[in-house]
Image 1 (tube, rainbow, N blue to C red):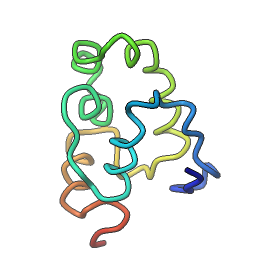
Image 2 (image 1 turned 90 degrees about the vertical axis):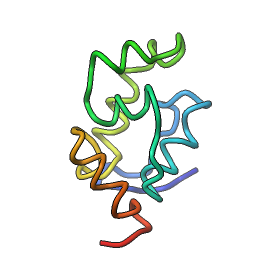
Image 3 (image 1 turned 180 degrees about the horizontal axis):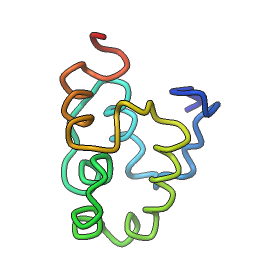
Image 4 (image 1 turned 180 degrees about the vertical axis):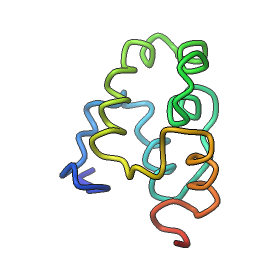
Length: 96
């Protein structure tokens, strides 16, 4: 995967655990809703992020934060409103 989603350059997928990459990709590209940990992380809900994380994701929260900060479009993360709007517009591949 060598996508470029923002001005951060080619995406560094090594920041995201392998079992989570597909969910992150489908959320960013197509606005597919994510559940539990990933939705909480994208929405910047720290408490729910930690509560819902499995052991691997808990140890990788810093990588998720770096990934979204450096590579994800700013309008797709950081709040519940951004998350909901991103889903409604169907991500990068959807309506503007």
